[in-house]
Length: 428
Image (cartoon, rainbow, N blue to C red; front, side, top):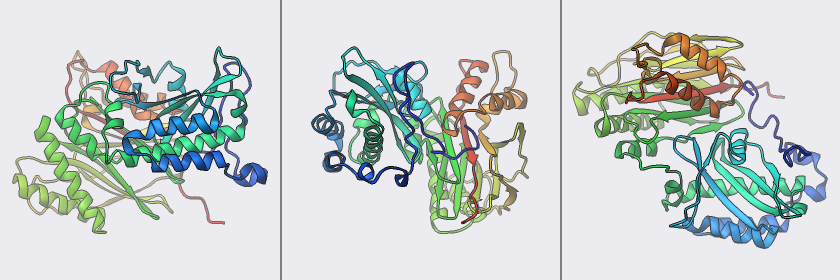
């Protein structure tokens, strides 16, 4: 639900058409002390996960859940790059089919981020589906078969935490193994797409003050669009990038731009100077023959004050209450177009409950088969129609609306980033 921070409520349904699992969102203080204590089983499984080899995480987890929780089935399903299917992490040669994100019980859990139980034919056995999410970045779903007596609220709560620990270990393991990256691929990535996906910070993230979701299309053949974010205790920096060109040339250009911006950001300077230094790096390499359109934003988490540098084509749209409108900025030169360009930050205010949408020209300038632009009217309608979705699900919904409009042979990248702003409440 838009406007509520993640975790505002966390509900797990029980059997289809049956009773729900009582809420898992209670604080530890609400749970009797004997139940609040982390169980020996939990600690044992956690130790196994932490000690497992990167490529053997799932098998170690499967063995530990069988021994400690009586699990007779443990399957990890990873969301593919386009977030349309959930693909099993399986042994080489396994022919298990992927499951659709829309229309499957596992996909329902991926979308809702709520654990759910389902009955199976075996008496006394339930299927339990758990979201695997790391700091708001949705990785996939854990599908378990468990004895019914293990699916108590406290038992499910432990398994939810273990699924989260597994997710953290997968993120770390990605540095050392390709097992989980390969599982996410419904088809082969182009080399340019491989380079672009490796640049990204994630697909979504959440904090008390905000939630972000983002998506690039075509997911398996993107060229120059990109996004990046970084947070501190007091600020969120967000950049939306659209590099010119196609294929490897576009990917190399964007790679240089994103890393130049990161290098400047990590030096601790403001967004205007970040833009200026990245501009110099690009001009030094391409001498103005190639440039990058970029929108840079710096959010003050305590106040909602936002500084922005509009250096090109990405647009910002805002949904405040029921009103959807574009937020205009004074356009400045794209990065790398001319030597030693000075950039001037502009300012606006984000209010709690605001939804901010960032879109590349591959969205708002996309053409239909008849030559009609997607344009402001249809984009505003798509934003309105997605108003009840969480930030992580909004980009996919808007890109699906876009896909129904554009020429099937269109090859331009399309990027959507959604930021739900909750703000920071007063310190008590």
